[in-house]
Amino acid sequence: MISIDKSVLDECIRVFGADLEKQRKEIRHNLLQVKSNYFDQLDSKQKRFLKKIIQKISVCNLMSADQDRILDLITELGETPKSKNTIKLADADKKNSSGKPINNISFHDLLVLKFNYSAYRGNFYPRLFSRLGIKSCVYCNSQLALNVEKNTYTQAGKLNGRLKVAKYQLDHAYSKADYPYLSATIYNLYPCCAVCNNVKRKKKVNFKLYGDAQLQSNYTFSLKDSLTEYMLCYDPEKLMVYFDDPDKPLQNREGKGSLEDTFHISSIYNAQKDLAEEIIIRTQIYNQTYRKDLEESFRTLFPGSGFSIERFFLGTYPDSKDIHRRPLSKFTQDISKEVSRLSSES
Image (cartoon, rainbow, N blue to C red; front, side):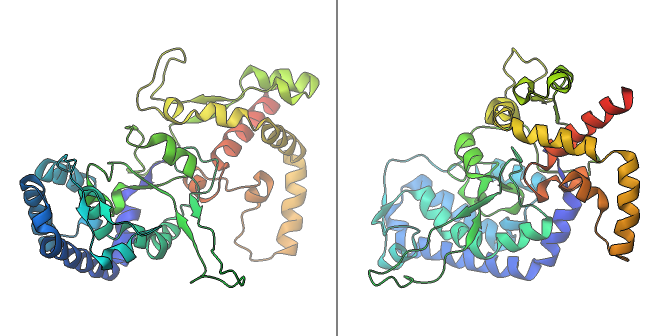
């Protein structure tokens, strides 16, 4: 719900430069194997498409392509050629396929496989996105952007293989089905929860995760008049959550590409009125007088600590730039500010 400064991502890409170059060589090697092992199974359009991708990855790293370069690549390479034919996999690739072994695969799925997207989800992207400070869904901010795979065991109850790890759930701004050569491109990957990823699929969303530095989000949660109604009776059912989305200026008209109409944000948060009530009560308890007393005690108990006392009062990170670090941070920040304004006016 807030863009990350692209210069921060560029610095991350620079830090992981050696990893990315190693991965570029791995992907190029994989694609050359496709040309060697499967070329006779491809139609003429697929052959041309594969050759163009190999040419590109031989001279530049597609994983580190920025937004402008992505648009250039889409213009130059286009979408995956549509075809009903499937490719019979070699034994080695059957073993590398995620899930149950399969014998046949579509052309675009073969390319995604060879771009090592599934492997990088487990061993590379967690390091990169952790460094960026992204842990929650960038679309709804209500859940973690992680997908935990269950462990499997033998009949004797022993772990079958290695312990499974939590992987980042990632949406592709440009679909990997249409643009498999962008399936591992960092600028094309948006960490999100499984629900939002399933809802979005190939839909276009106007929100851009990587852009110019922002001090404040363009999106706002509020309770509006329902906050005053709640304060009169303390009945949480009186609360109504509103989500101000710049891509949906009129509530009774469709906002194409808006977060609200794509992910139903207000519905998600109206199911959590108890959280809104907790924020209201916490904000009122920690009034300015009480805060000053606690701040003095905090400095005595934790001298030299870099921990923000505001984070304690709020129950999450207080700065807008940090909302990706924890689920529900955006909602908590906005409602707390609204309650504080109402208290100061009364």
